[in-house]
Length: 283
Image (cartoon, rainbow, N blue to C red):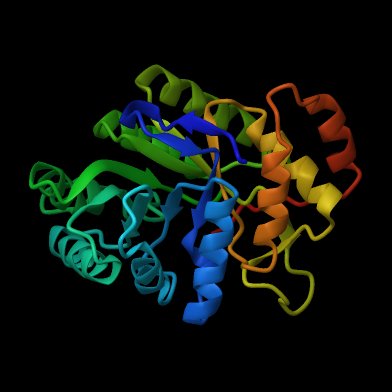
């Protein structure tokens, strides 16, 4: 079974791998239920989704019916109070829930930061949702090379409970990224903020027509996926959002079951370094 870790100040014992709802984009109800059942069989008890992921919320809502043992997170791209509030109401309806465990600002970037965090911005809907019991905890996510900087700025402005950031071996080889993400991890540890990571098994941007669901080209070989997953999970304070592809999901789950804190990161880096991986600095 996949090991569990304390999800920051929420206190929830979450599986160290979270089910990423993007994997359900375009999936049939049967295929979605199979993927979620498989994750649960491996011990995954934390699901992360978003309105952006097609019918993912509704598919997860169908699967959740009658379950009370799953930590549920969703997001909003809304940057104003009204946009975010309407998103939350629709998400709760699709998920068939009275409240979510974690509600997050999705893909916040520097250009939209002032709107989202300012007067009549999404942050006001977030505080209201928490006060009204519609969201137990609040988070913020960011993508691309500027993500650690955006997330640190967000934590300085508001006491979020969780962040989500790109974190992988090749990302830490991008100029300046290792220092930026290191500073973010230190700040989150100081604040007891949960850290979710994405893009662990990315090989790099697609070099030809995409043949998988993710916007990036993923690793395919089980041994390579093992190394990439183990490298991330060797950090005991982070969580790994599983790949956005139902066909690759079993390989990530299998790798996670064999992950341990005693991983030799130098050896993993040597093997990963031979794969000519490219950091994802966009999106």
